[in-house]
Image (cartoon, rainbow, N blue to C red; front, side, top):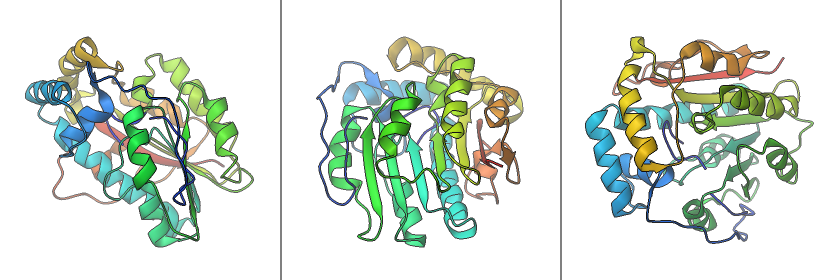
Length: 282
């Protein structure tokens, strides 16, 4: 889960130790968001080209590593809140990225072992890790589907094999809509997904911003460098543009905030130019 990066890998996993399969599409000649993000959070699943771009971006915009930590913290806060306090037992995590510690299913199934989680991605390096790491409890289900955020119909069709769309679902979109460069297309993706889940479902979202009040202006030159030297291309948006993704939904307190300040401050984390919020579908 990321701000800039890593939420998009292929394959399908049963989540009960079953198979994951998909075409090999790994390209190590160009830096890729999933692997660079993995490098920023201290992982080992990256290549020299990823480390080179990651170091350059971090030199231009040192807050990027704080954003990575804050985004993970927000994930834990949101999933625990939804599982413990809202009784959510189904999670659709679109753009999972490389598995690390405390993934969505691990957090949710510690609270509710029968929780059902579907991860969505279309990146081959994520596939390799999904095969061995995205496994859950015997009581619950952890599944993995190969689909692209630009095709919400395919995501919903395949996820319906695991999730019951007559019951509330938490739709997780952490650091993924920033790869949909057209803002209207991004809004349309959210609308289509949320239209297919029932009342009482939730949207959990983070997105990088260029708003100066949270230090976002520094992202602009760094993202320009990224778009010239890595893939896929990325964009930041204003708080108002990000808030519009929640149109028709009811924001939970404290609303749209720096993701390090959602429902309690993470004392070890700085305010970062990455907004986060959780909203419920009436």
